Amino acid sequence: MEDNQKQAWLDYSKGISIDHIKHSFTNPTNFQVELNSLLQKTVKENHFKNAIEIGCEAGISLMLLSKNLEQATFLDYDHTILEKVEKVCADLNFNGTNCICEDMFTMNSIADNTYDLAYNSGVIEHYTKEVRTKAIISYARITKKGGYVIVAYPNHHTLPYRLSYLIGRMLGKKVWPWPKEYKFYSLKDEMEAAGLEYVERITMDRDSLFGQWITKYKITSKFFLFLDKFMHFEGYLTVCIAKKPL
Image 1 (cartoon, one colour):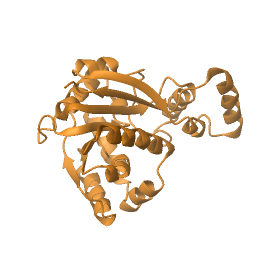
Image 2: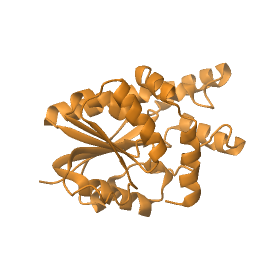
Image 3: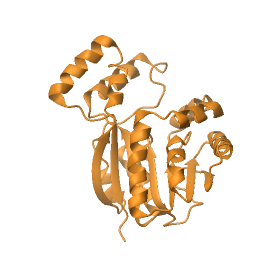
Image 4: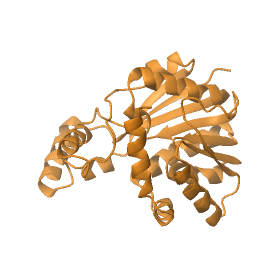
């Protein structure tokens, strides 16, 4: 990971408090709710027992999923955010949770074929194709045979989000405080290069499209809602699903 990107995330995480994490858990965003439904379905249909969220930051997604698991592992390279996650899990009496402070490109402390489900959201879009492939090879290594790797990221192929991103970046850090995002349609090549069986690409959370930077104002919102009648915009979140061969 480039040092400037790593530092940007460390700086951003400093502003995330324990109270904020608890509030986010009880009031998840639309995309977190929809992604959680997909993850729950995957866990239940395949009788999965454990999962790891790689690059979890505040860990909201895995907290929502943890009640369906015997073991839930939060992994991030920022030990300070993991300390907050650990405190929230203890305060909320979550069972079977643990935290690992490691880089997602190595995860040396985790053995091969450890988890039924390895996933993340809002991580992979910050990397070039070469680096994305390296990351997913690492995800695949720690996933059990027959397990799933699921990766979610903002959908730059839906016009409202793409314009919001470009305008937000032009207006600077106060509007768009996160590192650069790359535009790519799917992770089919990267997942197959990691030895995974690519299953599908789906999109979700259309509601959030009309709360993005470009669509949150009444005039522009009406304009994009009108365009949507003809263009049928994809949802804000792209999700790519792959299975590790038996």
